[in-house]
Image (tube, rainbow, N blue to C red):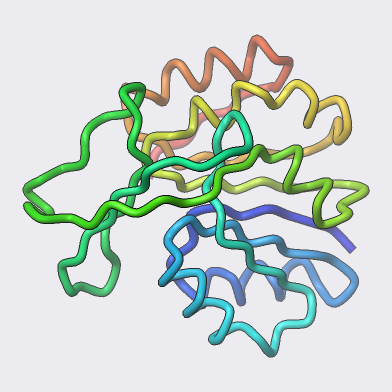
Length: 178
C-alpha cells in the first residue's frame, strides 16, 4: 500500500477519498492545525482503519505558534499561522478572529512519528505557510526519493518562492491552475 500525508484538510470527504485510493494496506496521515476541525475529523473518520489524524501545523521546525482562526459561522472558516513571514489574516472574512496556540512540526518528523517507511504523496493546503513547510524538505526527499508533493498555494507569493525552493532542493516541479 501507498502512504500519504495530507495537511490542511477541512472535509471528511477528502479524507475518505484519499483513504479509498490509498487502500487498506496504506496509511493516510491527516495533519490539521485547527483543533476543532481535527476533533471533528477524528470523530467523523473513526471508521477508517488506514487513517490517523493529528492536531498540528506544518512548519519548518517543531514547536508552538500562534494560530488565528475565524469564529464566523460558516461551512469552512479561514485559518492561518501567525508569523511576520506570512500574509496577514484577511479581516474582511472575520474582523474578530480567535488566536490560539498550536503545536508545529516538520513533514519529516511527522513521517517518522507515524512510522512511514515509504512516503508516496504529500498534499499541502496550509494557507500561506507552504514555503516554510518545504524549506526543510531536502531530508524528506532523501528519505523518500519518489515522493510527490501537491501544493495549493496563494499566487504569486508564496507560490513562486515555494517553487524556487522545491527546485533548489531537487524536486521536479510541474504547474497547474484550477
